[in-house]
Image 1 (tube, rainbow, N blue to C red):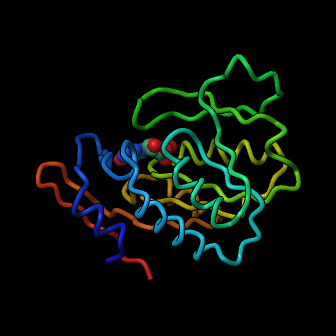
Image 2 (image 1 turned 120 degrees about the horizontal axis):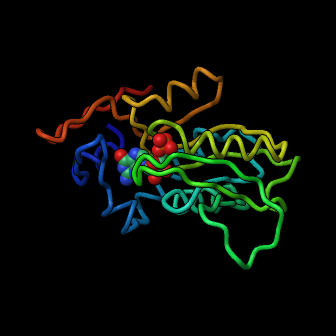
Image 3 (image 1 turned 90 degrees about the horizontal axis):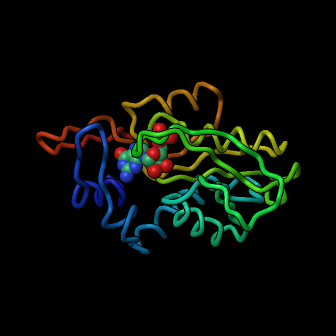
Length: 194
Ligand code: 5GP
């Protein structure tokens, strides 16, 4: 069992609707030690990838992405879910259905922050049905940037996102993959990773 699986077993709460609550170390309060370890693990798994930019989506992906960007010493761009009045830049636009908020979000990145020459590592906290990651891949492809891979803290293996990305040929690394979880008994089982 790795450090993140152990942390999930000790701290996470399984909520109805296949939601894992890890507010005390990732989604509300941020445990810097755990986030640092997640980032180090992802950087090690992508150590051969010549990443020029880290791309994530607000808000919970940002903490991990910043830590990864810090280790790789590359800029971090986060896609926004609402258009701000103070940005007049042209934007790349995609859409993602939010698994946790049950609504469709527009997702934006200002054009100057993603270039044709960029080699992108996509980072997010959770992978469920893959909506958020697909929106980020769409935005990267609109920019003509190359997606080198996708790094995730917690993949929920019983949802389709991971399978779809792997079948589409993307390099996907998840620090913890949940095989199944049950909110009645509060049991969580992880997929074995080599
Ligand atoms: P997807 O787009 O892959 O369906 O869902 C991923 C996004 O939804 C992540 O960015 C994450 O914020 C949120 N999410 C999905 N499942 C969970 C979950 O079980 N717990 C939490 N805290 N967030 C989740």
